Length: 94
Image (spheres, rainbow, N blue to C red):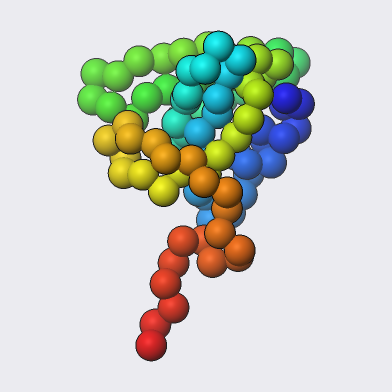
């Protein structure tokens, strides 16, 4: 996947948590834009976990095969789904 595609999901405002799937089947949930950083040359991303005492992972963007927007809770459950049609997951007030 092109790093520009990942940066597009990363740059959405308001931000929506998303899941990156790699070629080996691993999934990485990006909870907040401050938890993901891109190397200046675009060859590596650094993802920080939102969990207390969490982890740091270095990911090659070329190994990311798909992106999905998550509707799961922030406890690590991720159920990727395509973005809702412009609703940002918010319900309209009656």
